[in-house]
Image (cartoon, rainbow, N blue to C red):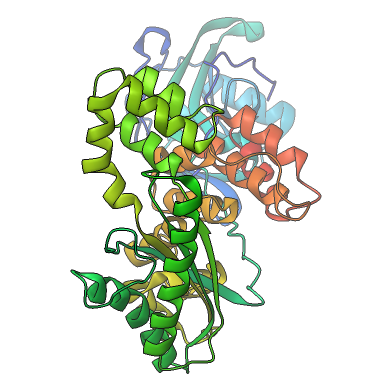
Length: 483
């Protein structure tokens, strides 16, 4: 059989599930009465298979004519001919046999029209090649007369196969480095009340007892759970308001902080915990914050003074003289809140290794957990599951500026099909990081681009890290099927 040039539309290249799609092309069909039915086109066990019923009952072939029937697989660029069928008139049939012998090759089956079966089940298969991911099964028929003159020719599209491409990446989650020491701290403010001009904290004055108790209860609660926590230190800082002379306020702030230290130390279960103190005589930053958020007149002018370079007593005198009404507002509404003490309790948390204990901590006190412990808990869940996503998001909530937390949460979102969330997180991740982490950040961005359909951009990113992230090579092999 001679080779024929096949005309067909260029194909789309895709991968993932097959779907047969019959196509009507009656305009160029030349059947001479030969019809097909029950057409099947499918890939199996490394071969592309064709099966169909061919009906010859209505075939119209004169004694001296020949009808060549050639099934062809093509994607518009590549093509392969399947075993052909010759339906010959009696004179033409005997001449062929006399000249060539009865065909024995599997590539050609010859019938005498008068003796041809009314119908036969045709099957063929060829080794599978990648271009067959998207191909058509054509049936080419050529009617020839004397001297092989072409009397008519047509191509009928019997079926089309399409493998839709769906990028299926392996997500690479970055394991955080375990914390050598899980140092934590709790901060707060105690709003204390003082008798005018007094440098002693009176626990029986107004709400002072409750405010002091906020500090001591926190420390005692941690100390009582020694199997998990170890309190390392307490830092107290006392503040006075700018009302009055700076030198007086400085002594008041120092004395009040020292007095608070004695009260706190006395109420602790563990009296050996170190307590450090400091003070700030006049909290002008607090004044600026109050003014900024107020609706008082002349805000800009007052802020210029408060934030300016004048000495503290000069600021007070200028504000009193220039803006007496506003100064009264500051004395009544701002200064009482500035007379306070801040506290910071530093402690260490034991490492956790039991996954169920970690999961319970996620619900009750996630601050106790290291990023690596969140990772351990997530690893015990099915990737992409609601629990998995929740843990990764909770880790990011506790470590919002950590890029490993961001990339892992982005990977988790992609594993669940949430590209919007993944894109939001990946946009916050730099191209830097340590030499070990940076390629994995790039890999996550490449996966995002591929899942978003930006295959060229994804391939560029995967190629840039191919030697550093093993999964990049496999991803590139996948993307090659999309071209």
